[in-house]
Image (tube, rainbow, N blue to C red; front, top):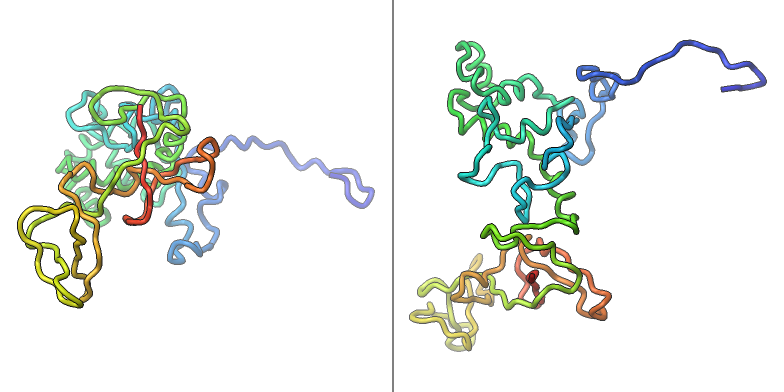
Length: 279
């Protein structure tokens, strides 16, 4: 770049296609920077970088390989190809770390067969750092999924925005199109399932007694929290009990054609109208 009428000075030609291991060049190490949003931990300890192993695979395309409504890196129970040839969770064939503070230990978890047969010194090191018995496949798999957890959230979010996918909406193996705008139906949800002798009814001002017998939809029930009685909406239908990130809410004041529906992630609100997607 010219500056002060001086000719630019050629100092060299550089290839910035740096390979894994160039942590300082990528800015992952040696910065002496603390994260203001993560308990002031060192960025060296919490920075992550992941490499896509094959863009033709479901996870690498930000899609759930089993078309589940909610993507996770753990394969569904009982399906084929749940694990790699090294007995690690199958997601290890999709993503490889390029930087992680626990890089060497991720290598152990990716190659579980070899690690389980390693010497006592390595096994003890893994036990001390990761707190697992590497000879126990379930412990090793669970720890690898935990270390992939932050990246899993990012991939799952992208999958949640897909509008052209076929998904297993009800978990019964039937694939349907992602619900379009306004293909939602109100559903009458409750906070909890009724149980006799667990909740209370009001008998007179400031007097409460345990509710016994069958559920009565005409009665207002209460739960006891920290010495205070709070009204609670109950049901006897387990399918009508609210769960975060399963149902939707919208802005009821907008015209129907202008509404958007977002997942309800907070605790149950009896004043809220909840929706479920319909085919």
